[in-house]
Amino acid sequence: MRILIITPRIPYPPYRGDKLKIFNLSKVLVKNNEVRIITFYQNNKDKIYARAIEELGIKIDLIPLKLYKSLFQTFLAFFKSIPFQVAWYKSSEMYKKINLLTNKEKYDVIYYHLIRTAQYLSPQNNNAHLNIIDFTDAVSLYLSRMFEQEKNFFKKQFIKSELKRINNYERIAEKFDVLFICSEIDKKFLIDKGMKQDIQILNNGIDTDYFFSEQKDYDRKRIIFTGNMPYYANADAAFYFAKKILPLIIKKDPEVKFYIVGQQPSISTKQLASDNIFVTGYVNDIKAEYLKSAVNVAPMRFGAGTLNKVLESIALGVPVVATSISILGLPKELTKFVFIADTPAQFANTVLEIINNTSIRSGLMNEGKNVIKNMLSWDIIVGNFEKFLVEKLEQKELKNP
Image (cartoon, rainbow, N blue to C red; front, side):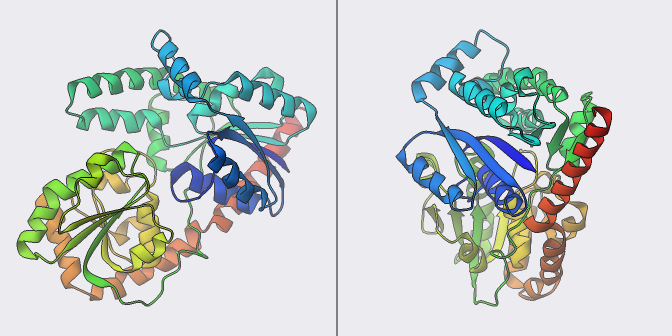
C-alpha cells in the first residue's frame, strides 16, 4: 500500500504520546508499504529530527509552523466556532502541499493523525481509496474531566469554551471512512454522544525490543512518575502526588525519594524539588529510570485514552499504583496488573506496601510482562492495522469498481 500520514509534529524523538505512536507505526508500516509523512516544523532542530525519519526509509515533507501565524489564527478562533487547538495548526501552506501530493500521486490510504489535522480533508483528496482519522483520545472526554477538576475560575471558563467547540467539531470524523480511537472507553463515549461513524480501536503499543525486563538491582526507596510534562494532566498528577500523597508516605518512611521524569517540566514543577523530590527533565534512557525504581505511580485526576507510562511499567515488571481514571483506557486483560488507589491515604498505603513487599515485583508483575508482549507489541498492533486497511480497501473497491 501507499500511505500518506498527516501529523502535527515531527515524530521524533519518540519519547511520548503522539510522536511515539507515529514513529512506531511508521517504522513497522514501512517494512511492507510505501510511507510518506507530511508535518510541521518550527526550528532547525526539527529538521535534524526529520533526518532520523528519513533513515527509516520514509519520505517526509516539512511545512513551517510560524508562531505569529498560529497566535493570529488562535485569536481569530475567538470569533468562530473552531477549537483553539485546531486553529493553532491552520495553515494554507499545509493545505496546498497536501492537495499537491494527492493530486500528483495515488495513495491507497491517507491517515490523518489527531483531530487537529481533520481540517485538511478535502474533496480534492478523492484519489485516496481510504481517508482515515485517528483521534487517539476522545478530546471532549479529556476536556470534560479536566473541567471537573479545575478550580481556577478563568482556566475553567477557557476549558468550558474549548470543550463546547470540540463537542461540535468532533463530528467532522463522520466525513472520513474510518475513525480510530485508542481505547474502548473513549469509543463508547463517542458512540454515546451520537457519533455516526465506523469507530475502530488502534491500541497504543510497546516497543518490546526496548522495553524488556532485566534483572537489575533497584532502589527500594525510589518512586517514579514519568510523562511529557507540558501535558497538563501530567503536571497536575505530579503536583497532586507531591503535595497530597508523598507527605503521608514520608511520615512513615522519611528515606523515600520521588522522581519526576519527563521533558520540559515547567518552572512551577521544578520548584517542587526538595530533599525528597527530584525533577530530572528529559532523560536519554527512560527504561533505566523505571528499572531502578521500586514503584511507578500514575495519580492522574483527569485525561483520556491509554497511558503509555502504565504499559511501559507493566512491560518492565515494575509495579504500578494508579487512580481508577488512569486505567479506564487500558485493555481489560491488563487491569489486574495495576494497583488501584483513589484517595491520598489509600495511595500512600499501597505504595508503602509495595516498597515493603519485594515479592510483588517477582510475582504478579512477571505475568504482566508476558501479556504485554503477546498483546501490545507494535509488530502485532500494526500487523492487525494493515490487515484491516487491506480488507477495507477491498470492500471499497467492490462498492466502487
